Length: 100
Image (cartoon, rainbow, N blue to C red):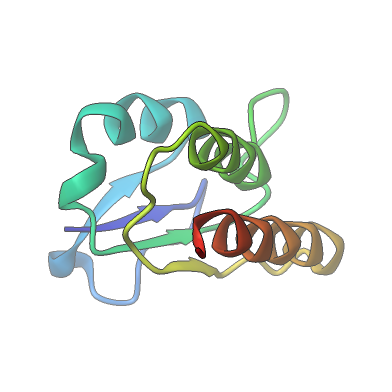
C-alpha cells in the first residue's frame, strides 16, 4: 500500500495511492497498518494550525526508538525547502535507529 500526505496536491497516479489530507488522519491510519505500507510520500505544509509532515516523521522516529520497525521507503515531495530539509534529517535519523 502506498500512502500520500498532502493538503492540496493529488498524487502522481491517483489509482495507486491512499490519500490523506491531514497528518492526524495519516497517523491514525498508520498505527494498525504499519506493516502493510510499501511507500510513504509526505508534504510538509498541510494548512494552518494542524500537524505537518514533519510531525508525522517525528512520531515515526519516536516509534523506531522504541523498537517499532518502519519497513517502508519514505519520500518527501514538499516544496518548502526548510521543511523538506528538516524532514530529510529525520528520515536519516530513522534509518540510523533501525540500522544494526
